[in-house]
Structures are given as structure tokens and as C-alpha cells.
Length: 140
Image (cartoon, rainbow, N blue to C red):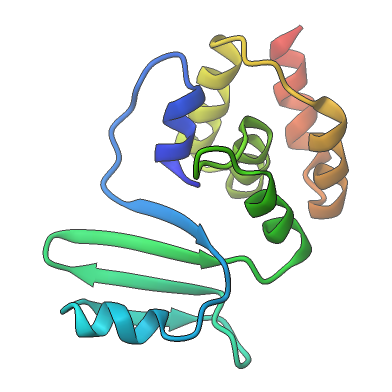
């Protein structure tokens, strides 16, 4: 769901050093990675972690748990195990680091067809309308 997902929709590739995977809430996920020799750290509060940071054997894997409406929706909309272009854009609008803005720009350069109404729904939820306005101004 991170840079690797963005690569599916970008005009040109970019380098990344980790894998971001959106997963369902699964009992035993932490134990399975630990048994495979990885160091696993949970983030978040409550009974279910928000994320599992899996490190070791040269791998950097971030497992984001679909435990809120938006992430559950993004997971359900995924095609071929990759979130949709709209959900990549929403994720990048939320994160808004330089590399995220670059991902959005490259996706727009690739002339991907976007469901603006879907994006605008989540832009309102996450209060990033100003960022989406900047992106839309670039498209026009």
C-alpha cells in the first residue's frame, strides 16, 4: 500500500527500501513472523495493534492493520492485492512527505483516471482538503 503500490500507478519508478502491506486483523500474525526469525514490534493502543513493524533477515516490512473504516474500505477495494489508485492518493495526501507528494505528481503525470468523488469523501474525513486542492490545481 506504500511506495510499491504507488509504483503500479506512477509514470516513472522510484526506489524504496521497505514494504508496506495492509492486512486484516489476524490472530497469530505476530507469532508467525517471530517464529520465522523476525523481530516484531507492535504500535498503537488497545487490544489490536495498528501496525506491526517486522524487521530482520534484510527485510523491512510494515504491516498496517485494517482496523478503521477507511482502511477496511481500501482493503476491500484492492485489486490484485494492491490498493486502488484513489486509495494510494488518499494515503499519500495523509502522509504528505516530499516522497508522497512526488508519488502523487507522478501518478497524475501518468494520467491515471481518478474517482475524484471517492477521494473527496476521504479528504473530508481526514481534513486534508487543502492538500487535495493543491493536487487538483496541478492537474488543471
